[in-house]
Length: 182
Figure 1 (cartoon, rainbow, N blue to C red):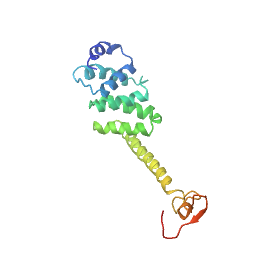
Figure 2: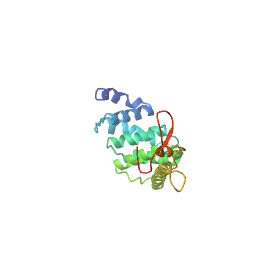
Figure 3: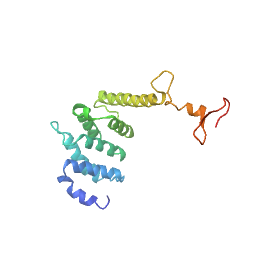
Figure 4: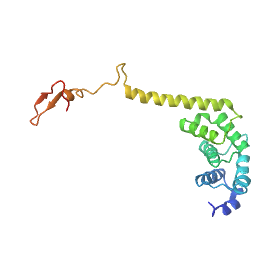
């Protein structure tokens, strides 16, 4: 990233929106944070300008999520970017988000101590939905362990019989005495 940053600085004004997000993501992957020039002065103003477009934001939902997570991984909080992304996700793209995305967004908010003042309802909806989804998953796992009856899990037919009846080498079944274990 250090070798590429000079070339990226020259190209940043002509980059497509997807390339901007890829640069932020790559910087987060390698933990490259050059506060003075690359991120703060070049990349982030272009992302801000795209987010200010009220009609259509050129980023996909995954790119918006990647931007928030990458910036939080770099501990590079920008109120305008976070507010713009939350506004876009809450107003237009909330149906595209699922449990893994809710968890990633909430973790990113927590890392940078973002209180989501732009849309508290969206934040609460994500938090409650994630909690409900996790509860459903845990309940399903618990049902698999306990079984569907009130007495608990049922053993397959013949399973318990194998503890009471032994088989000799010639195939003859022999009942084991009551107190002995094998």
